[in-house]
Length: 221
Image (cartoon, rainbow, N blue to C red):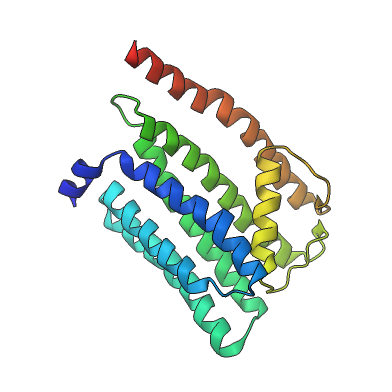
C-alpha cells in the first residue's frame, strides 16, 4: 500500500477529481434522462474512487467507511431492481453520500494541506475538496427534504431518477452563488444550510485555493 502511495502520490488527487466530476456531471444526469440505466456504471466509478482513497490514505478505517458508503448505495441499486423505487431507498442513499463525502473529504484535505511542495495535483485536490462539499450538502438537503417534504420549492422528494441530478444542480448553484431562483429553500433549516454553503463557496476559493496557488508560484520562483 505504501509503495503504491509513494508511486502515485499526489497524482491520485487529480484522478479522484476526474472520477467525481464524471459521477456528478455525466452519470447523474444520464440516470435522470435514461431512468437509472447507468447505475452499474456509477457503481464501477465509485469502486475506483474507493480504491484511490484507500491508496491515498493507507488507512483501513477509511477503507471501512468508504466500503460502507459503497454498500449502502449498492443496496439501493439492487433494491430498486427487485422492488422498484421507494422512500426507504432515499434514506439509505443520503447516508451513503454523507459518509462518502465526509470520509473522502478528510482524506483529500490531509493530502492537500500536508507539508511539502505545493504541486499542480494538490491544487486540483483543493478543487476536489470544494466539489466534495457540494456533494455533502446534496446529502444534507436530501435529509432535510425527507424530514420536511415541503422544505424546497419546486423539488419533490420522491425516489425518482431526476432527484439526484436536481439536488446536485441546486447544491452547485448555491455553492457558486449563481442563484437561478428556480429552487428556493422554504424551511428554516434548509435556508440555514443554503446560507452556510454559500458562505463556504465564497470564502474557500478566495482564501485556501488562492493561498495554494500563491505558494506554488513562490516555489517555482
